[in-house]
Image (cartoon, rainbow, N blue to C red; front, side, top):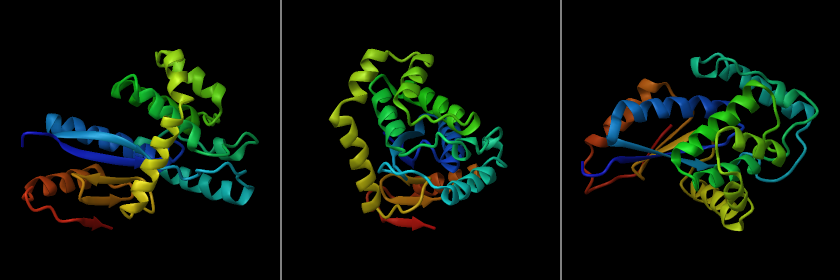
Length: 215
């Protein structure tokens, strides 16, 4: 193949199962070397600001505790959703990730891992602007450049467009990965299953792509 296969991972920075999938997909990318290229695509589960009530917070906490049983989820706690400073929306951290991408893919990934660490393992509300800027500084981002991108309406539109595109492609639950523009796999799957899906796509004739949804 002349170009690497593109794998798009639709995710939310506050989603525990997305954090599990992120680590598996990054491992997959390392396994395939230059044959696979992973792109992070924002899919806000909470696009609008709305207070998360206690019953919903309890449901989210239960999902997080299940994700914590996975090897990639070790150390996760439900504190983010059980305290009084719960995120109102998942848009701010996703916008911040798009702003970090201006400084390179590696910068974005380091920032995402820092968000996961603080939100899912320390229970810190990473949807707050002050927290986002502090974390951007700790991973070595150029903060003035980050701030410019974070406050840009174009960055917000990029997140919104990604969300609309995913919905148009049939994404209703995340994590979800699109392989080579035409295969869609939803849910956090074992690494071996991701590997099999990518190998299967590579075996298909690129001149005759056929859309598939793998449930």
